[in-house]
Length: 376
Image 1 (cartoon, rainbow, N blue to C red):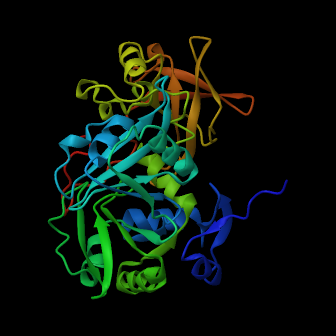
Image 2 (image 1 turned 30 degrees about the vertical axis):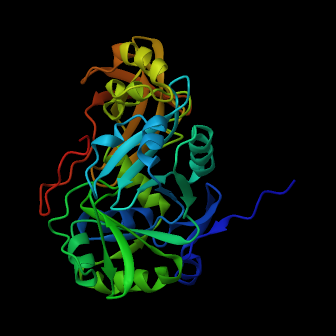
């Protein structure tokens, strides 16, 4: 049986017309790069980059029972959300493994969830399975909307001239409901996946190309570049952000993955809570950062040894354009997770010395606008 034809974002034609190298990613045809991954990466670190992230799932929740429904299926405490605030959360299975990591938005009318493209069907299924009579409705708005990320030190200067609400005072993990280009309804959040100052916009699919081209024009003096999935991955990696299918999975519990702060076991019963109590007491592993001695890249699956014993495996690795070093994240036995510990990584059959270092590898310089802590 042939594979299903990949879905196309509202910006697919633009990507093809402007040199985007398209790949099948999580069931979508997406640009992996336009020029080079390093050039696009550096544009975000030094100025501003533009990403089509319309493949991400966008789910709207309405009804009096929406909050209770979301809280029953997610690990964080959604009842703590203030209006127009966003929360990083997780969806666990009954064994405490992860179905996905998500963002939960509290809007004036209802809630919104953004999830990973590869897990959208599983996320919707999990919500529907645990509806339990709640007076609420879930509407999948993924195909009728587009999502665009503006990321980098000049992201604010690029977006603000186009938006009708002030963004310099928008706090990290908060959202504003205004208009871009004077007439296009746009949900703008102070969020991102690069470690830089950034914003993410959700607009109607039919308006996506107009908004995209306006952002490119507005950011031209800052060296804006359209960026693909390749740079998005190297940027999130340097910022120490976990990626589902690498640092997070159905067989990895959140305490091992370093996102246990998004699990609120004191909020009451929720899916996976009993198993997560056990994982909190004994995570079984720890996510670490590694700096390799040479320039060879340790990819996902490379084994990690400590004192001549295998203690874990690499989850993500690359050569960092910003730090000019070969870096990796790995899940290892806790005994090998202490900063400064020397380990050995098997890189395609050859041993490579590495040292446990702190995450994130990269932190952006403190600059305007300042950000509150994510883990609120």
